Image (cartoon, rainbow, N blue to C red; front, top):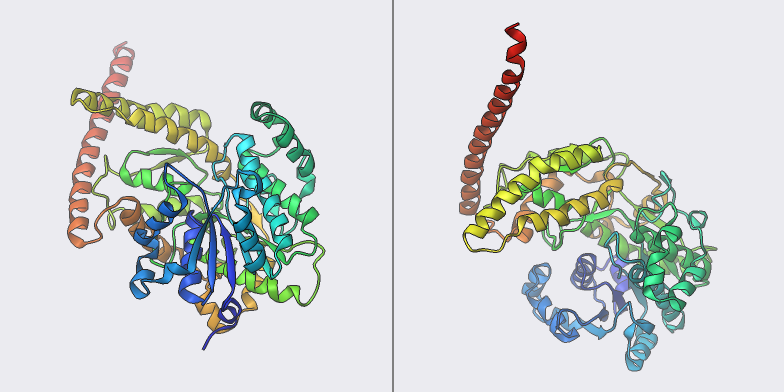
Length: 500
């Protein structure tokens, strides 16, 4: 028998932006697997020489859809890609596709965004802010719209230490319409040159343009059946559609993967700060339920502002960045990589100057040595170039792994309590019951398979453990040599003092 949420989605037409991204793919898979949606329209752009249809065709071999396609080979026929681009005027939609959406769509999920923290401002404004305006204007013309879920971020108001489920227009030094007017009238270089002035207290263009989008929706959403979803840092799946699935190297997972490979050994990190990380499948379950609840509430009463739902770890089951590091570190013997370059370990510091000092010993000196060997073998050097990108990303991420925020999640907790027991089983997102030890066991196994591209079989794991033991021995020998050398140098300096 269908649950309340499943009944809501039966024969519904859904429109989704950001469908080719990490969050979007998991959302599409879950909708197709658990509901009888009639159609999912997905906005896709041409990328890397592939047109929309070619990009969509690759989904048939994407691991996230593998189990679903095995049970229903024709399931992706319910998905229809539409050519478009969030950076383009009118979202790049053709007149016919636009009319199709206006005539048919009932549920909208707007998840498209650039998540690069220091994206040039003109690009971040186009994708994260102006596209929200265009989506809102499109939604207002949809004849059958019952729910619109806008995906923001828990860090959109990171200039506050205590983040409630409300709007914070006071943190913006220019009204959103004024900023968009500057974007429309000035050339890209001038807009980018204004970045420090416009950002004010915000640490990067990502959080700033997400905050602008929230102000825009607060001011102009009107009577739309609307809500804003603010997830924390989205990481690998916990359970669905398979444990530990991830397809990108953004945020903390990039550091974790680099440490597992043995080439990231030092990072900026406050081990005592709370980690605002959330599994992507829990995010998707929340979004699916949010659309159901938004449509239900729209029939009851008018909200003066679209409601906001923060989604972060529960205070009953918190996790620190030190816990993130340690839980992953305990599993290095369980899920070792065959492509590791050295014994995995990760030292953390909050000091920028100490980080930059230790980088020379932990990263750059070994990097130059390996690149020299590659050159001697006639191969292209790559490690120093890679380290340059890694160090920039670590510095950009540093404010978010050094600060503890308090997030109110009253609306999200209330949402969970509105679900029937069957829907709670089907669309689980209660962070107060998440077992972090179990999560990391699943996530590390998935990281090895989906990012490391390694065989999940026992033979592959055995080879990894043999390699890990070898590197552990070499690491101990190197430590002995370095400490012996340091002691010999220190003795040569102090010996004359003892002979006096």
